[in-house]
Amino acid sequence: EVVAQARPTPHEKQRFAEAVAGVWDRIEHAVDALPVAATWRIYQDGLPICRHEQAIVADLAAGGSRNHRLVQRLMQRGAVLMGTESAELLVEEYQLQKELLEQGADMPAAEADENRRLAAEILVRRDRFIAERINATLAPGDTGVLFLGLVHDLEPHLDADIEVTYPIGSATRRGV
Image 1 (cartoon, rainbow, N blue to C red):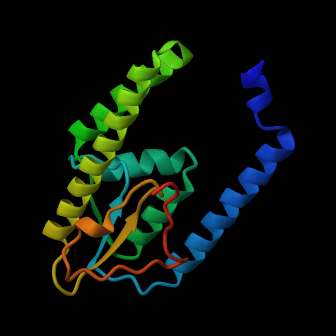
Image 2: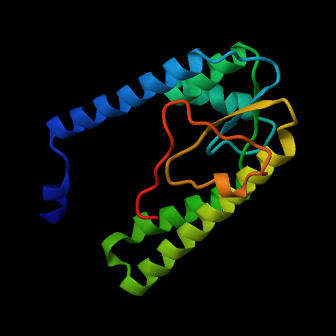
Image 3: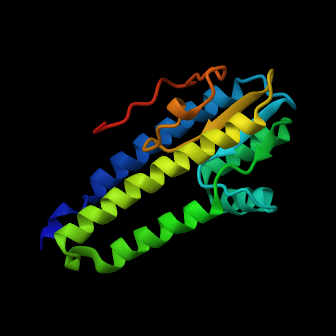
C-alpha cells in the first residue's frame, strides 16, 4: 500500500518527462553551438575503457538515448570518444545495486546502511578513476566534454590546470 501511494501519478510522470526533455534540449543546444575540433575528447559516464566504446555508444543511441545520440553527433563533427570508466568498478557497483534491489525491504537496517556506505565509496572511487583518466588523456590545448550524472563530484580530483565550465549552469549536489 505504501509503495502504491508513493508511485507517481500519470500527470507527475508526464511533468517529469517534460522536465528531463527540457534539460536535454538545453544541453543539445549548448553542445551544438560549440566549435568542435579534432582536439576534443568526449568522456561519458558509464562508458568503460575497452575496445568497444563506439559500438556501445551506437547501441545506446539506437535504443533512443539522447545522451548517446549527442555523443555521436560530436564524433561526427571530429571529437574523439574516450573510454572513461573502470569496467571493474562499474561491475562492482552493478552487483551491489542488484543485491540491494533483490533484498529490498527485507534487508536488515544495518546491512542497508553498510551497502549505502559501500555505494558511496564506489562512487568516490569511480570519480577518482574518471578524473585520473581525464588527467592522463587530455593534453594541453585539448578540450574535454564530459557527460556525467549529478551524483558525481569529479572536479576536486582533476588536475589544477584543467579549467571546468558548465555549458548550462554549474552542477549542484544535494545532501553534500
